[in-house]
Length: 420
Image (cartoon, rainbow, N blue to C red):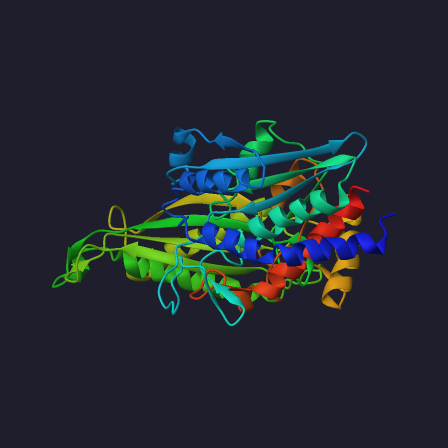
């Protein structure tokens, strides 16, 4: 067993190098990785250079351009840093993603400035999840400087496709046999150990009508009115989801969001085509195939009712094309993750003063991809108590630097135990 003095030495090393860790994170935040458009290879190159300064050689695994462009992005280079310590122990992967949604409006700080104010760093991806590029990297540095493990290995997986589903991030590395760890920890929040998460179905719905001059709208078929009818039916379905409850702590019920809509040609033209995109979160107990079939049925019924109410017939009817954009399976609690949960809860309580609960989250993450390859994993990392507090995917995303410090200490301590 690891002596308590080793934990104190790990904490002290992280304290002594914390200013360096903050600068490392600032450098990561200052290289944009907006996805879309998803030109993320430059960030991987910059990260690899920073890691080289620590003596960490990063393997660069570029995803072929055709695959990247087919998914609507521009470039992806995933990184693997392998740190072998000896035979007989587990290989533990630490995964964080560098791609982020664009900043959007409403910022009071430069979204790519990494500005530190009142103990917080502001910037896109400070909390989700470039913050864990820093926590994971410096936890491994502390582990090697202080504990000097003699068995097992640690791998850093820094990937760039979480926002579009992860298939070209961890999914691509796993599919091509470039890694097969025994356990894994993914970027998360420092106040809880996440052992399950929702699934996600994203779909693109295109409503085709018939353009007409706004002065004679009866000569056309209004695609926007058709889309509104469909969206109202989907929102009514969303109300019903509140009665479908999950048994996983931390997860409540399914829900649906329509996040983007576009169409029409001009103000004085009846819209001939409207497209919207929906996001359907699935609790672990749901069957994804049944969920998708139900949504398609609701849309079909709404279109049929829309045409019938307006007497549309033949060519003068609204019709719909539906395209699945993403199907991310839910992550369910796995028995093999027990050593991870135990180590993180033990040291989370020691460092934070309270035991982090093992719960589910309504998010969906790349951890599911490891699980599909039989690799037990959990979500844990630098961040606040909730996604809301971090402002993730909103203006003024921020990370409490004290949370970064403490999460780094917990991860280093947990690795020390798992490799002892």
